[in-house]
Length: 532
Image (cartoon, rainbow, N blue to C red):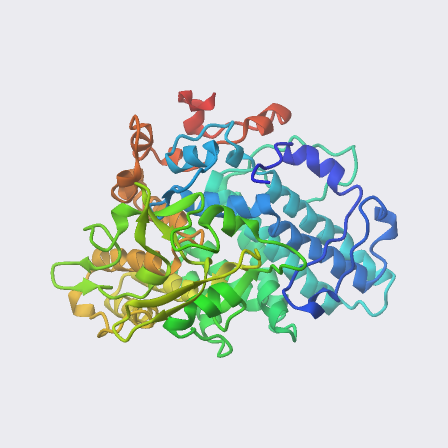
């Protein structure tokens, strides 16, 4: 269950879409599967499809279903979190997980395989290719309905390519479906610039046509709305250092009054246990009766005991008593997060093993607090595997805006960034606001935003990409070495990689290189012994 399919993504493309399978989109409510039906694999061929609006809508569901596939979600988490300072090895991680944690990654590592994301991309490409033909068969399938569904497919495809470009920098850019044997499946890599330009172009189209409301709560959180498109677009702009555009995209989300932050003491039960909260923007949906989310249980642990570790744990070197912790942080004139409830509800306070502490986020069903914000009684969920996986929520957008404002750099922008940071900070801290006079300059504010994003978004697959943005702005891998080096063990190979920008990206899988002669391995792995 933990191992991904090592088959080539492009070889899979040839077979996967010649016979299209309908998938159920699990939206956590009994009425949420009425927009599609499941057919047995092998019974539905292309010529039977694309005749009605309902068939087109059902095909769109396969795009979402692909995102929530275990292998795809593994990569979202592994690529976005494991190399960061947020996590270390917990109980019995598989060898490839351990190698990623320690920056000992080779092209044979199972997590270098990108097939699951390209499978989703192919679902999206197939939908975008065939869906317009439905208007010829179904007079009720209007252009506006088509464009609204296309917006979702474009957003899902953009999300996949955004994970790929951040993880590999250069990947094949495939925009047509694999539907026959005459196509060329040996596609060379496109540049990072070409991929980012395509993502942005797709999202700008989706932004115009995406629906703002599907009329059902789980649909509004489990499908891409305009808010979801704008959140993703803001993230892309932030990565691409288009900071004014990032602020604008964030404002498009923040101006929606239907979104609001959950009270700090209810974040665990409302945001991470029940899911689809008022601050949720886009999350992958799971329900114990329809589809399990095994990822959280394998990686973070599950119900039963106070110290149950998954494959990962929160590092001991980031505990509140340590000088490099984001909690109880002390600067020259300020202390932060001395009683931050995120520091007692997102991870354990009792060590388990030599490395660190249990991860509570996603594992607790509730966590009550005393008046001084010490934890009163953590309550664990049952092992029902029904926790949603959050891709974007409101606090993420608030802090993306703060980061962009800091990079814009004027005094007014820095002050506005401080207001953004205080929005998320104050809901988790019974203290006075953080004061701009204690930070003031761009460099200090940049570090504050990075700390607050770590406190707020830890274990959500964000931290490594946050650190990568820091390295990219400085064009210097060593800019993040101070964050990463405390977790390094062994022969120091991982620490040595912290000085090379190309080493911060993933290698291309050996399997992909073998079946696609037009692929070239990422530069760092060509010039080291890591290619074996």
